Amino acid sequence: MASFGSRSRERLNSCHVDLRLICDEAIKTMDFSVLEGHRSYSKQREYYKAGRSKLDGVKKKSKHQKTPSEAVDIAPYPIDFKQVAKSKARFYLLAGVMLQASEKLLSEGKISHKLRWGGDWDSDKEFSDQSFDDLPHFELIEV
Image 1 (spheres, one colour):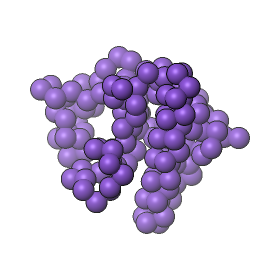
Image 2: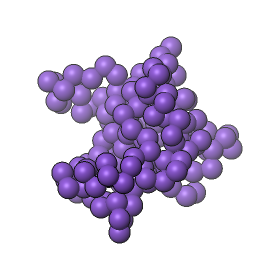
Image 3: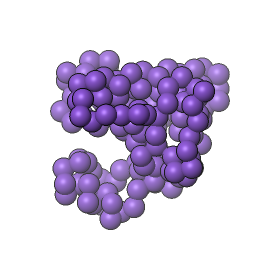
Image 4: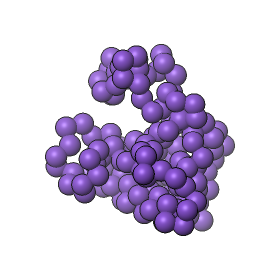
């Protein structure tokens, strides 16, 4: 069974307990790395200016900016960005694992939030209607 390395665990520890529990459940099924949990104001501004985020960090704050973070960015491990189509498919597979883990934990009463994925912002399971794909991104939403 896969487990988190020290950097992934450190990043995950900056997140809300519900995200930690979801990730701990999901890694039992599929190996992945935690890219980012909590995000500083300056990093959020950098991502916004580079077009990597739609949230400016001031008027519209990211859930990554909360303490603890209500968002996490993850990537399947290992990943080969030279094979774009296969790598992208692995992000969709990981999303299914994460969403299934969150539904399981929610139904067991172990977490109190639902999970939203940056590849399906409106959670309608229709991926072609997204105007901004953020495949590594998962965030907590109220039930």
